[in-house]
Length: 309
View (cartoon, one colour):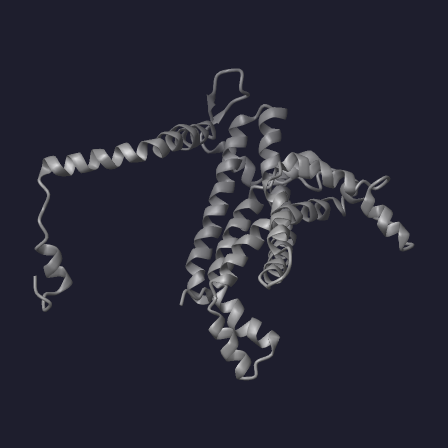
């Protein structure tokens, strides 16, 4: 092999493995993949295929399935209840995503500085992330209790009347958004903190020497170099936002008056309350299609604003 050879010529000269060695290599790779491939097949791919098959039938979980083809999808696409569920889900995302990102970024920048007890504060802010959603939802349901909650008590000290929170159709979704953002702040903080620590300090110092103020350094250096971490946080948060369920089910159950009926809550109700598993499966696949399309647009759009350099 000489230095004048092109990469294609170098690859062409590499020895080709005999069929027996290639088979042995493939079997070796398969053995190492089995611990993750088997659970993926049993608990993800096979249930997904079963859900797709169920979506083409009418089934109440008891009697035999009855083939209906695409009727379940057609009914859902023209259903006002489905439209409302998607609308409520988008409402949740519109309030949750900016709040959790802004809060996480603020915490990350604060805890990126040298300060006493920094590691302790990082652990405290991350603690809600590893706490059960049921516990967090019950905690916030108690905090936001209109009659005896601490939040309305504190508002009352200022001479104001607190809202009805999760008992009021106008405030129920903001209550869920607030609880959700509080729980996920620690996760966003950790991701953005890692991104901040990967930014070379020389860039910040050079900008400071050139006379850039704090806002200019943040806008022109920190945010562009933080864009890969921001992209990851936005993608994950959007996917989680479309799948919101636990906090809704525990805090409001989709109420009051259907004000917090999100898509996954509707899937749950269709299956276990109304015995319409076929429609529930079809709705799950519609949600999957929406999430897939949104994610594809995000991945393609990252070229315009994500800076990996």
